[in-house]
Image (tube, rainbow, N blue to C red; front, side, top):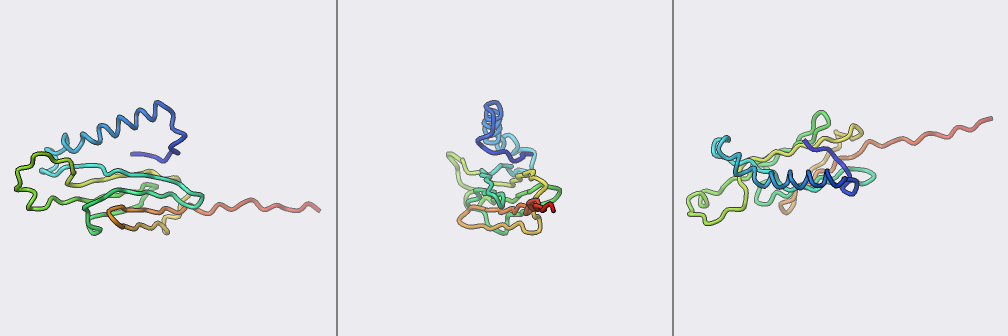
Length: 147
């Protein structure tokens, strides 16, 4: 499970850990293939950013239909799951090289408490899922006049 941190605030050791995670994520579909009924498990690439008003999660999902994607939020966790299906004509081909992942994916992100969960929006365009997670509006203290 990953939590949100500003990219520029990440110390060198944490950056190296992320690089290792990405390395093993790239290997994972091949090592997990046997235990999932012949389906691969993979992790799509994701970018997360923050504005004053919201968190923005963008997930690359080329070749996936909108009906095969599920976005949920519960207990401060945003979960994006789905499946990229292997076309029948590709199953029977004698593949020389296969770099595109097929099968199920699941990504979970822990978000801060101060979000408006009932206003979360997701849109899917050109193979990119964008999830907009609005922050709760923080009220500024009221200045009280002293008489």
